[in-house]
Image (cartoon, rainbow, N blue to C red; front, top):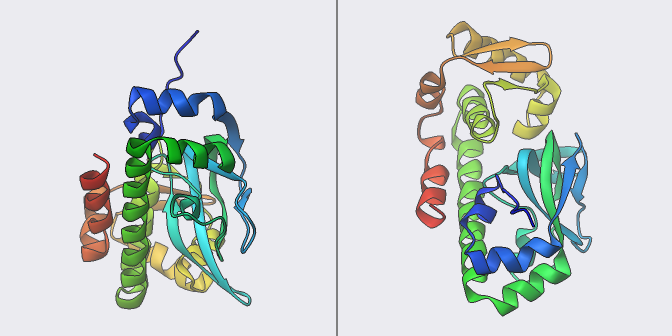
Length: 231
């Protein structure tokens, strides 16, 4: 029997025993663009461990929406399940298409109850994700749109396989909670500084270090906390 090779960092970090306990319930699936992962105030039935692509956690109020969390191959959806609940008020959907391993909530809950080491690892991830959410709130409240855009592009780049990100102005506007013209202006500024190259539906990262400098303190804290907690 062949051994499954996982790209998801949480699955990679599991002990052999914990990985063996989850593997029979993990199903490889494709993540389609805009695919719904969780809907507000609805029981979470499945949890996704991305191998590629990006999942966005989006808060809504009326017609307004803004991204509050980003999940790639470093993490998993369904943090409410890790914390003993079964639902969330947020929308969760695929922002960049990719692939994942999916597990039903019920066997994951059983595995968490049966293994202290599994529970501890995934709870550490939940802590890292909460730090990311807090840093997003910090960026949204203190940083100008150019810096917020730089941070978001860095986070997307961290979770993608190459320098070309399949992103539209409209999707970025939703993620940052701003109007599309504001995104267009910010992209032009970043492009003018030689940090990115924006084409139709594609943003290419040119100077990552320049993006980090522009993002300032809004980028790096959550990333360092993830490394401390997960390694």
